[in-house]
Image (cartoon, rainbow, N blue to C red):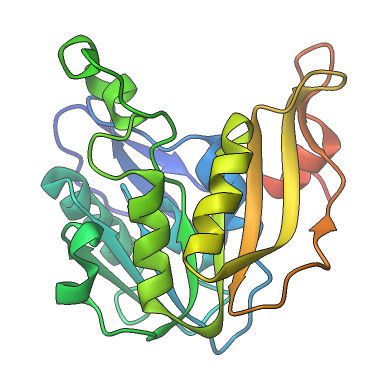
Length: 246
């Protein structure tokens, strides 16, 4: 694989179908969160999928074998360009389309009710007074400067078909707010999984699946996903997700 890297870039192995991903160490590199949410949805081959805030395109690269077509939108122009390069690098241009744009302007970019599945790994932390002057780089990318929780859910609801599926990873501490926001946009949570850093520790993240127009009730709460053993090694569940264990 002949790859021309630019200053500050590195080539990482996704451990999925032989795919590689270019990342710039001076930009926001993907974390485990993206890998976990990419493995959470229940995919169908016919699905048309939208990834909200794709970054360097990691989620589309991980799910490309599972669905029919993927659109990925990214606000940061440099990251959007890197995402396009990653799609070309892995010969997936016919399946994955990267768009540079602001998904808060979803009505100008997408047709209503045109997707079967939306995936999001959005900024987690609300912006407080003074944060804009204190935060830089990666820390800034994790705060809601460019999209709030309501922005993400609003965009997902607009593009999803009736009974379409929305999957998102977010902070466990914001679960009540997430449920309220979903309800206001006619989305009903149907699956929930908490993520714990270690056994016996409080959950720090959650993954949710919500369905447009579904009846309330029948929420399936999955067993917790624990990231690390007490000695710091990955648990067997995490190793399976990363393809490190059969």
